[in-house]
Length: 258
Length: 205
Image (cartoon, rainbow over the protein chains, first blue to last red):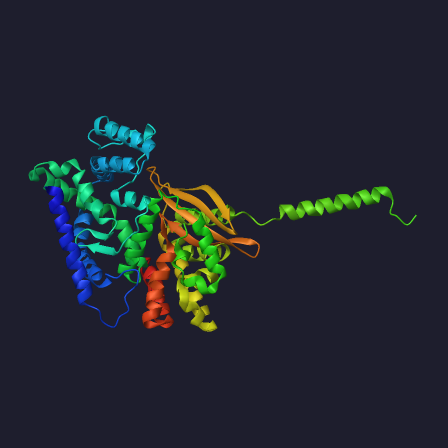
């Protein structure tokens, strides 16, 4: 039931974004890799306004009142409670070794690590992995699809949107009473934002156009994660070939350099 | 009896071998050496951050960037298809500004030390390009992946791209710069970069 309603919600959202995109085309040449740039920018600005006026100040206040060990514990707790999603995607990507290790990790950290507040598993040779449904789809060859900015959630893509729903469905907190879920969800949101303060500082300092900056950073980081930090080395050759042939400098392959 | 006496010929042979040996020893430093040179400087800047001050860090890192980066290639890639259309003096103006911005960025970001260490993980060489994998290890054990792409400039390996946690600096800049040049031209881009440089300096006042 919940699954169906999430799907409907996403479909409605998709249609809304799509129709705004079609309705508005003026003289400005849209980036061909980002056909939904106009609605995406609208959502980006919407998110950014909420972020600057609400989440950033709250996150800064939280950093002031909650000392680092507390925040680390909070981060670890939410990472652990969301870890079933990682385990499921290990399996979907046929990473059986990681599946075994991550299952062990979840059990050890949930028990010995007191509900995930601590991370004894890493020291026991069961390091954290980062997997989700979007990475699974990417691993099996699905392209990124169009880039999307989701209201309140930020950058995503056609390939990554289903993972937003599935990670919620695989998170035990989703099934608790709203009295518990809502405050915990708020704490998670604030803690996540606090962890990103440094990154958003870098964005604010370095970006000429924050929307483009975030889009490109998002795309690349997703690609990096799909390959677990080891993208294929032949992309170096692409880079060199393009370097040699000046005409090929338009080739997006130039940038697939890891 | 026009031939040189035997010991002398041996001496010549030895000299030749020594010279060959010397030329082997003088082979260009490996790509990791370039990256490690940069990292050593960054670590110094972090440790002496406060005493050097922002201006001191700019002075420290600038010459090292000149030695370790290939700004010409970077400039060509980040301006993309626009590079060909730029006059020589515009290219030079852009490269000068870009170099100043890179220096300012490093001076701003590597300013304090909190137990971090740089670790070189390995390198791969393919068709003349090299990928050097490294990471920053923080005092709490957390790591940030930092990979470098280098190409051979003359006899030296120079950095042409930095990839932090999967995000390619070159790709990011190329997207942004291409958009600005396409819309407002190279002068507008240079002005924006100058404004960034000024804001780094202002942040460190």
